[in-house]
Length: 261
Image 1 (tube, rainbow, N blue to C red):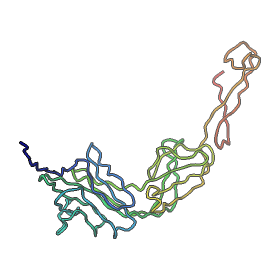
Image 2 (cartoon, one colour; image 1 turned 45 degrees about the vertical axis):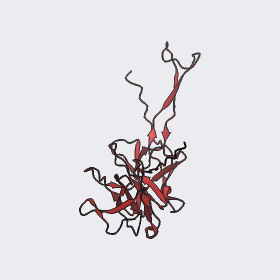
Image 3 (tube, rainbow, N blue to C red; image 1 turned 30 degrees about the horizontal axis):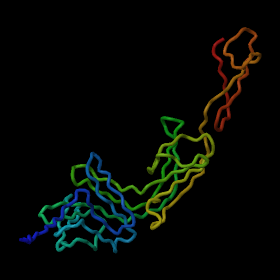
Image 4 (cartoon, helix red, strand yellow; image 1 turned 180 degrees about the horizontal axis):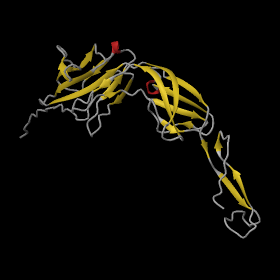
């Protein structure tokens, strides 16, 4: 006897914990909440009029917009589709319901960057004459996002600063608006590029500065005449030692000190 058994296949759409809102943004980076918190995407646009947000897969949706007045996400009436248009420079939340009834919330922030670079300023450090402060004077649109899962303060979006110097080259590890660097011992050309991470869609801005070195570094070498290696540090009189200045920088005066006696 042949018995036919019918099976019913149930497909359950699970909400993935690593899923995120996606967008047609020109550039995306994540927040920097810190403290081990899950970061959210920040979407950057050239023109937010055409921006669109898309939620992770599910069967039901509700979108919310962040309110600076209440410091919370408030529901958007009628925004119950998987995608959202007509958005503004703000934070958004979407609550997604899966076919098994589970719900999950996802968040993002949206911004249109704009910047103009005026100049670079150099300031000697008051506490260390061998240090120099570089400052980029930038006119830029500011955008702040909030760590909505805690009471942490708001964070400012970073435009990205790429510093270089000639003849040295890129200034490693310095990506802020006002880095502290070692004062150069020779005339140096400093430059900074702002917003390079948005290219090629947005053109970054660049500024240069010719800096005249004022820092010096004292150094000397010596030779002991009449010895095999010319490096003896002690011996019998008469002992002749020749000292040679090897200082670096714009040196204008010298004062040699050989101790008492």
